[in-house]
Image (cartoon, rainbow, N blue to C red; front, side, top):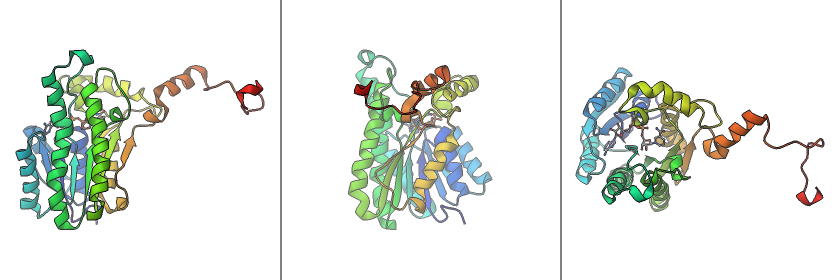
Length: 282
Ligand SMILES: NC(=O)c1ccc[n+]([C@@H]2O[C@H](COP(=O)([O-])OP(=O)(O)OC[C@H]3O[C@@H](n4cnc5c(N)ncnc54)[C@H](O)[C@@H]3O)[C@@H](O)[C@H]2O)c1
């Protein structure tokens, strides 16, 4: 028996990257999966991959910024599989990049429509279906960019921080309904989000990402899919309102600590006693 046997999941942004790896893993663990994405070709390929792994899946073309589309995705889950237990609000994009003063209002709004409104809509329309089932698990993809600042990535950082905040307020409100609400903050994961226009850059991205945090390898979609599986499964029955960081220790101290270690072989000079006392003692 799989860890998600008997459960129905809707996953947005599941035509590619993290969402696709999660859809395949959920399906292999026994869930019936609705794959929601704008990318029809990738979505249909993801369905095939789920089925090849012995799972059940359907594709529903969905723009997460559209309330009608998100409603239709949830309705598809109910029509095809009889209800909804899990929603993973994962669809995303880089959004408006560049210096703050050069971002147009239009591009600011477009960014937040996908990265924040999309998560709100997924929660909003999943909740009534989950109540009917006596509970459920809402998962969203935030980012370590929601925990700290990155220059040139303003709407993205702001939206991801808001997803973490929305996760908390929703978790408090929905606990009584046995609906858990969590988000995942990935570090650098090698997906088409970095290489969409130039897939041949994937090896370079892999190399760069491997240098971006203390654990010296790039993150991969499965690293996040496994956390999503924990949050979707009954193993996380008492976990709610949390931002689960999966980042190879990037936010634990960052790459600066690692570079320092590599360059100097140690962080601070170690006194002969091996103990650093109060500074006034010299
Ligand atoms: N890759 C990373 O390093 C990283 C780090 C932190 C967070 N994230 C987040 O992870 C999530 C997944 O990203 P990924 O890295 O797998 O990228 P990806 O580009 O491989 O996948 C994102 C998917 O979202 C879909 N999508 C985009 N806009 C959409 C919309 N309006 N409606 C429906 N689908 C839409 C795309 O078609 C694509 O299939 C995103 O929310 C992203 O912000 C990624």
